[in-house]
Length: 98
Image (cartoon, rainbow, N blue to C red; front, side, top):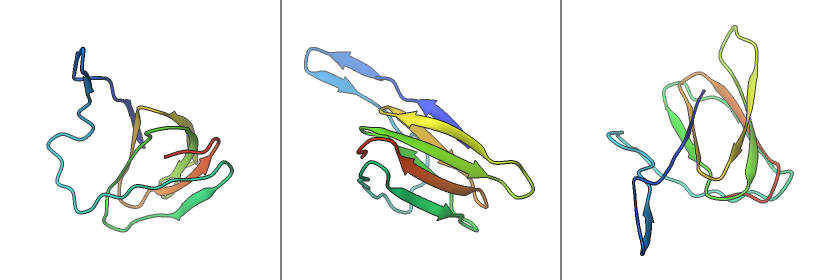
């Protein structure tokens, strides 16, 4: 698992621009909303990489690579999580989240 806090790439009086993914080949993009307490994931991908950008709310991410101990982190608005192939991942919404 890799976690990055995405900050503004450019800001002026109109607002800001955030480059969330740069130079990454993307197969699909999905918007997911989760109610507080919702649990998602509980699986792994044999070949796919997965990115999760938190627009709003707060989520717990639990990951585990084969033959390794589980790791967990709290994700908040502006965080980008990356899970590589074979890494099990579970997301639990601590707050209503997008």
